[in-house]
Every structure is written in C-alpha cells, then in structure tokens.
Image 1: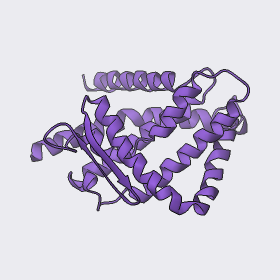
Image 2 (image 1 turned 30 degrees about the vertical axis):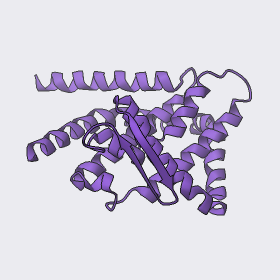
Image 3 (image 1 turned 180 degrees about the vertical axis):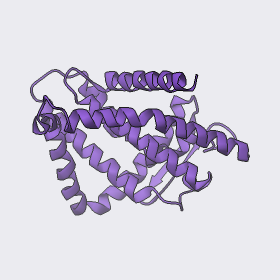
Image 4 (image 1 turned 135 degrees about the vertical axis):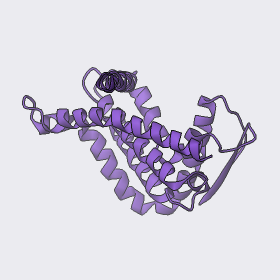
Length: 225
C-alpha cells in the first residue's frame, strides 16, 4: 500500500505546483494591479463581505441551531460527490453532532474525493453561484449577501469538523488527507474569487482554472524536455 501513498502524494504535489501560479496571478490581479486601484477591485466583493460578516454575527446568536445544519451539510456533501462518481446512497441520517451515509460499493468511504469533500467543498456556495450565473438584474447584490452567508457557514463547518479524530480523515495517512484538503480549499477559493469578476461566472471561472492548469503542465513539461 505504500506505493499508492507515494503515487497519491506525488499527484498532490504536481497539482499544487500547477495551481500556485494561478493563485498567485489572481492575487496579483486583485491587489497589485498597476492600472486598477485595490478598492475598485474589492468592490466586486462588497455585498458578499456583508453576507460573510453578517453570518458570523448571527452564527454566535444561533450557534446551537446551526449544529444540526452543519452535520446535515457534511453528510449531504458526501452524497453529492457520491453521485458525481456514480455511487448511490441507500440511507442518510443526520443529527446534532453526528451523521452517517451508506452508499453503493463495498468500501463505503473508500473513494477519496467523497470521503474528504465535506472538509473542502462548499456545496451551498457553488449551488448559489450556479443560480447567480443565470441572473441579470440590479438586485443581484441581495443574492451576493446570501452567497457571503454560505461562505461563512462553510468556513465554520470546515473549522468545526476538520480534525484527526474524523474517520474520513484518519482512514488515510494524515499528511495525505490534510494535503488534499488544503489544496482543494485553495482551488475552490480561486474559483469562487474569479466567479465574481466582470463577465465571468462559476462556469467560466472553472474553465479558466482548467485552462491555466493545462498551460502550466505544458510549461513545466517543456522545462523537463
């Protein structure tokens, strides 16, 4: 099994290597552009920021009520990713602080993306960004506030649920699980940030990231040969 671990870690290292240039370019575009002031760039996220900080405040007030929703979103994320990989779930149970999903296959959580998705995939944010891409009206700022609230919610989920005690995480070598989680978070962060750019949406943001990854693979390949 050790050779599989080394293969997986090598793939994660390559993924990180081709993602970092894109993340750095996005950061430069937002904060270090010589042509566009930083405040003008951050205007894109004005209402989303309102949603993020508003949800943080409300989260302290309704903390107990959110515990069940955090567990529900955790198990729902397992299910969503299971469907993406053509798994099917047979039963689903969530209660405050604990939950379980039973899917098709002999190894219920052996599929790495399905097992680790709840710690790095903000499904509600992506769902809302999907609908945002279909909207073209002046009241979209209201929707951006809701998106910000979803981001805040997922940050809270990741913070509360990510730990070595989780069987999803400790069934693999911890260095692999945490590497996967934080690289996936970086990728999701890039996609969400770019989705708010003018004339962009979540689909074009994902496509832009994939194109950048391909270009980086070609670049590094040319350096080797």
